[in-house]
Structure formats: C-alpha cells, structure tokens
Length: 102
Image (cartoon, helix red, strand yellow):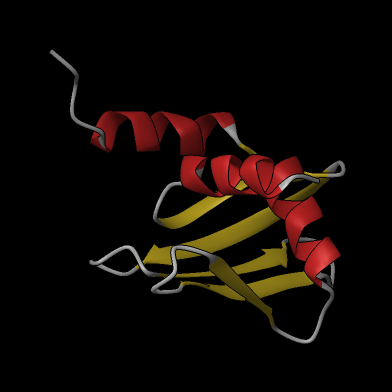
C-alpha cells in the first residue's frame, strides 16, 4: 500500500473510541492525535476474539512519518488502517460531532 493511501485512511479515523469492521470481524478502536498533530496512537481490539492492532506514528521535523508498530509488522498496521470501516453508529456519532461547513 502506498504511504499516501495509509495517511488518507488514518486521517479519516475519528478521534476517541469507535467501532467498525475489518476483514468481517468487529473491532473497537481508540485513536488519539496530539494537539500539535505530530503524534498519533491507535489501539484496536477484536471484540469477539483475541486480535489486536497497536501503533504510534510520529511526524518528524523533516515532514516524514515514522511508524512504530507495537509487537507486529508495519504491514499488518497498514492493512488494518486501510481496511477498517466504521460501523454505521460510530460514523453517525462522528458526523454529529463535526462542525458543519458553510
């Protein structure tokens, strides 16, 4: 997967807790961005199983991202972020918290 695709999928994730589907299984996801936007962290747990996905992403002074998966491959992280789809209820909550554009 291209870095641009990963970054776009990551940017689309809402902050806080949400639920969704990845490869047909339900996951609960906690996602945080730092106030300055330079640090991101994600922890996802399969709700009816044992799988987890966890990583930190740091934006370096050069503007390049530094992905730090927690005890898993970077490919697993990229695949999860690109394949995760918010559930309808999580997407609706996220939309209701976003300000309307003029």
